[in-house]
Length: 180
Image (cartoon, rainbow, N blue to C red):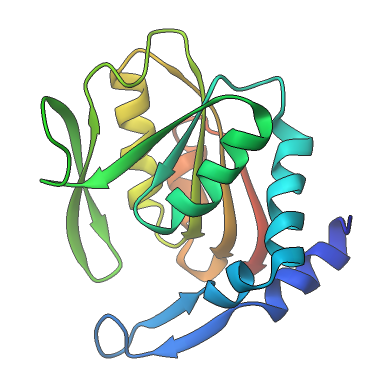
């Protein structure tokens, strides 16, 4: 399985830029081609599993693309998976956190009781941009009494400095590809 620079090159070759989505001036990073390639998606999942197996009890995937890889990672590690969704998408009682995006504001939620005190939680998403979504997810995990074992993302937009928002709250962040 590729690691290091070979993994970075593989990931970079499987991402598409979609200009002006979801609004003018924003370049959306689409990782659908990575998912379509069974070798590339398997390599990404196995890289995280190699690094995190045995150190997490639950994987949290952030809506929506974090669901896809996060669920596969949880399955491969033999641990549970918990979705963190946009506000209003989960039935029942939830914990919620609001945050600022590079182009607006949003709120995410997790079911109350989905995470247990003491759970070691890995947070998974596709892209780390300003860090708002991931930091809000970290807040939810901690509010539930669980411990954040780390944050794993496929792509980090380094020029937006989202890593700083997570490092400020003491979270280990791993990005497979950083674009400056």
